[in-house]
Amino acid sequence: MPITVHKLSSRLGAVVEGVDLSDDHPRPEVVADLRSALNAHKALFFDDVNLNDAAQERVASFFGDITRAHPTVPAAAGTRNVLAVDSETSRSNQWHTDVTFVVNPPQVSTLRSVITTPYGGETLIADSGGAYRDLPESLRALADSLRAVHTNAYDYARPQRSATQAQQEHHRQFVSKIYEVEHPVVRVHPLTGERGLFIGGFVRNLVGLPKSDSQELLQIFQRYVTRPENVIRWRWAPNQLLIFDNRITQHYAIDNYDDLPRLLHRVTVAGDVPVGVDGRASRQLVGDPSDYSVIAEVAA
Image 1 (cartoon, rainbow, N blue to C red):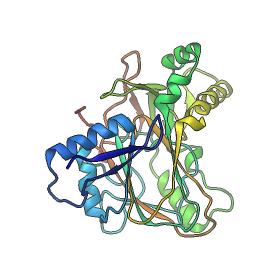
Image 2 (cartoon, one colour):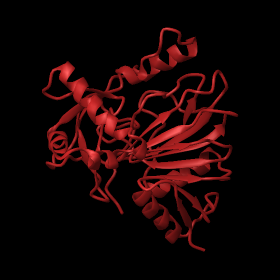
Image 3 (cartoon, helix red, strand yellow):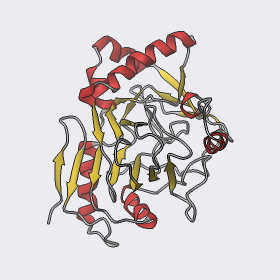
Image 4 (cartoon, rainbow, N blue to C red):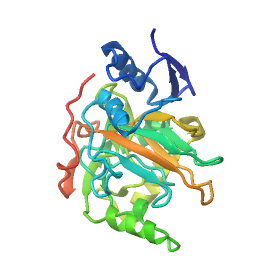
């Protein structure tokens, strides 16, 4: 039976039914259909997946080689490639794209619900391709010409003054090795050719501009990313899986569940090196991420 895809909005997001992700030997056409659906909808949601860590890794591998859990943060206990997204240590309540401080950020991220909250704890996904299309022509031309420096030692990872000891330790690990990379502000998707704003919480500054001008321009661009028509809001339930295209989306974990425990497991897929409208590729400025991830070859 073919898989069934139910759109969640006109711009991005779909719920997928009719596929058994626990199957150790899925048919090649099922994998091809999932890849095509991700290219079309950018974020895919699955209910009742009943996966463990190893099975989540296998599903992620449908899209390419998987990465280590994180460049600096240790993997979940008993794994090498699974990151525990745990409310006890960090709350990712800032818009971002995963691991953009390396030269080849993951092309795909998968999130599996392990502990969910009775209220709150939703994940927002934003369409950065739709954001680019929404820009006035003059702003699109400006964005096309810009490059940005991304780093893990920036606001996204900085704990608040009230941070717990576990959160402070997580931050220490997060910045235990510093990475900086220069990416195009507008990335051309290697499979679809779509242009998207490649920014988010790890961006420190725009190349060649004063800090104040950088921040003002980034705020303008980011407002287009988070316009309501570009955003879907997913309410987590047990045994769910989210697969999203990290090359052309941003996401945000809403911190609206008090002190309740919340745990997702993340597995990411090795990415290619971003390329801008002018054909220039990203370049690593500080740090060597080669032990975190191979550089992916673009494949349909």
